[in-house]
Amino acid sequence: MKIVRNLFASLMLSFAVAGAAFAQTPEQVTPADQDTEMQTEQTNKKAIAMEEVPVEVQEGLEDTNIQTAQVEEVYQVEATDEVLYEFVVTIQDVKWAIQFDDQGNYVNKTALS
Image (cartoon, rainbow, N blue to C red):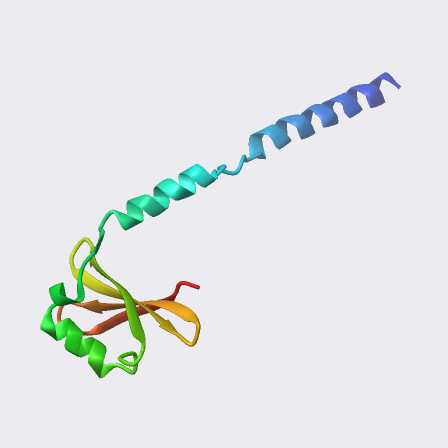
């Protein structure tokens, strides 16, 4: 009986040590952390007037099927190696962010709502 008790105690101790060794705590992300991350991403984004957008980019916007949408906001986004121009437009009750490079080439389209 003493052997069984020792074996049981050894097994329980092994499970406890193994559980502690392999336990991982997930990184807690708070809403404040998310706001900080979003602000960091937006620090390179500057609101500009349509008149400040290069002619090539304005022509690129006109060449797309988006020219009929109403442009609500315009941003200059500075990435590490390039400058993008972002137009926020509403198409059929959906708000979109549409990006062009400084040569007027379409880059990206993201739904905002």
